[in-house]
Amino acid sequence: MTGIFTNNEENKKPGPDGSGEEGTGKNTTDSVGIRKATRTTTAPRLVERVTALRGQSIARPQEPKSTSRRRTQLDIYGKDPEIPYVKFEAAARDIVCSLMERQDRMNEEIFSKLNDLGYRVEDLEQARTRDGGGR
Image (cartoon, rainbow, N blue to C red):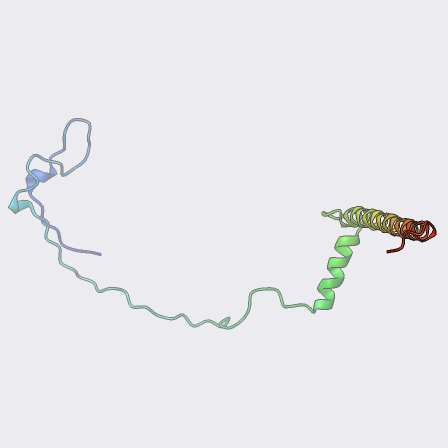
């Protein structure tokens, strides 16, 4: 913003020692020394730029999903990947397999106990009928 300013001569005196600023004189509130500004220009108008690149994309062109999947698979199974996916996959597979084997052993143990209990109940019923302990 440009304007015309009128100042009091008294305000151009330097301020207190060491300030080095102009216009810090004794009496800055005098009505004679008030700044008066008049606007000589108007606010800038908003304009839209016209360029030959309007509507053009500056990003990479999109590639097919198969290409990106193939590249991702190469990144995962490469010799020196950033994420050791192959090692993680092997460790996860080992954990799952060991849990499944444990579950199979537990199921086998449960079934053998059920069979044993069935035989015991059958033996107790036969012993009861032999002794004449019918109801």
